[in-house]
Length: 64
Image (cartoon, rainbow, N blue to C red):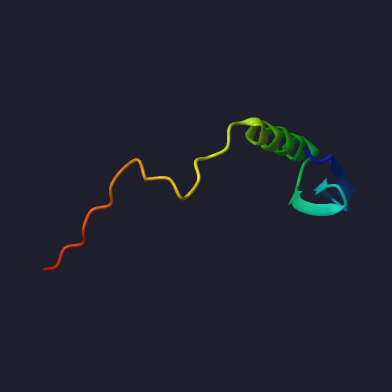
């Protein structure tokens, strides 16, 4: 996982991944929560590939 940092710029907080600014929020607490949530999501198992069969079938459109 990349290094994340929270930088205050004026009255806003910017979340940075490495040197790239990725998100701007109004409070440091909100920025910290979003970074924590993102880290947890990145640790989860990856989603199935788009090449796999769908779990539900698509309905045929009405011709009428």
